[in-house]
Length: 264
Image 1 (cartoon, rainbow, N blue to C red):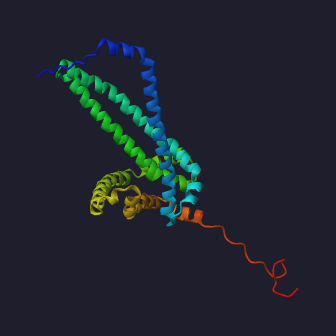
Image 2: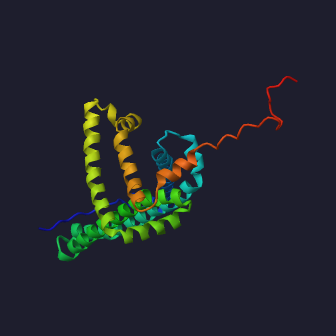
Image 3: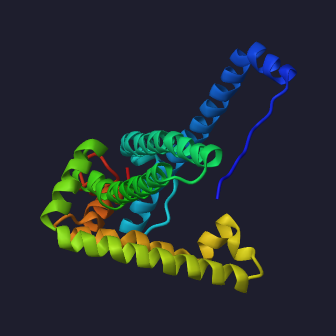
């Protein structure tokens, strides 16, 4: 079976493209810059939210302003690593997309052959490996490095190195944790869909859905914290001590310049 497919452009279309090639390139770069800016904004808000929710789960409180302000520097350091992971993943996808399109174009123009098919198979495998790496590294950052930042009081880079050393020393435990996270993700999707359908789609709304399924989110966030506590990194104690208000000064003794109760 042979396929044939051609794209015919008129002379006017070719002339317009040639005359506006710079404009087309600028528009493409502007669209790419807009996409990256939106991705950066979403990642920044996500990074601040990670530490705010970490603090709330560890302390058992529902603070917003205090953890948002208190963990600003840690969240900014985390954002750099998280957005860097996004950029690396995007570059990898684009690098795989170009040869994939070339192989597909070869199949369309010249028919089925072993070379392009083998190339597509290899590209698909590399694509899934890239997504697997990005997903596992993202879990390492969020579930291990971010809590270690709060426990140790270090930037994300140092916390990531500590997290990787911890994973290597307890490889079996973290492999089981990653597999259970996949199972939990599937269960969470099913529960979310059922909750949304049971509430006439109200549960699919962002704020209402997260409020309705808060026990599920709380368990997922506290899960890694209990795992790290068994490894000797107790964020519950550290965060609770940091969130306590400063102690009140002791009362003044009589004769120290305070109110003595005696008439003047």
